Image 1 (tube, rainbow, N blue to C red):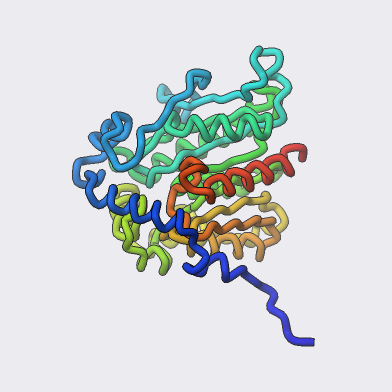
Image 2: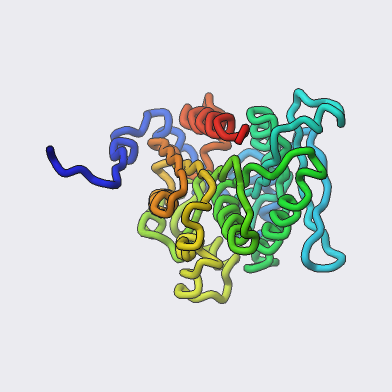
Length: 343
């Protein structure tokens, strides 16, 4: 019998030959649009946010859904609340019906710790609510450069602690999932590790929904070498990270408080929640998903890792008719949620 490896990977998923013609054409079109459009770090973050909502950037503007509700969660700072977005399953119309949901999702938006807010991902929030019969709370944490580290993570931690304590009382069901995209995936892990360290009985029975996350803010090799401007590139990452971490050295970025890959996992052995890691192979953060998911499994956590050939950063927000891999990722996310929502 030949010797077998204890760690295996489906290399075909990462081979450029596996990229569909649809993804190639879409990536070329996105690159052309981003090359021609204004960059946030040139026009300024606040101006770019306004342009984003006005549809004046390379991507379509966010769409707000009328059924979403706005509310606030108290922060650690007296007199300052954290804005949040609330989404219920569409099938549950009345307050009485909504008491029967199966759990709560804490969602943390992406945007490089600079862009986006709690109102910018309504369609995804509604998707989570409907496929899992869940209440979804999206956190409007403070963003850089106006509010650099640690302000954004502190808001997310405050929201996480609040939901652990109050979700059952407010919604009739416990916090079951935490998740986000890109910077939101990074912050989701930061929150989870904080809760594991500070609350000995903390459990997240559903798990983590981690879409194309960044787990090493000193930049892994894929991020250093990926220079195509397809939503996100290595050089653009530098601008985001400089806004979020304006004074931190490389060594300081390689600490668990900033980069969860460098956290001491030993105390978490046997306690890590299940995690869904999704990543497109044309994404500078591909290494982040690979190394973080393997480390997750090393310490006893269940990691479901799904790679989508040819998909770029942020692809889960594209229409499945535009990119079939977006539909596949949503279907995989639905399966992950439905298999675990009853736990």
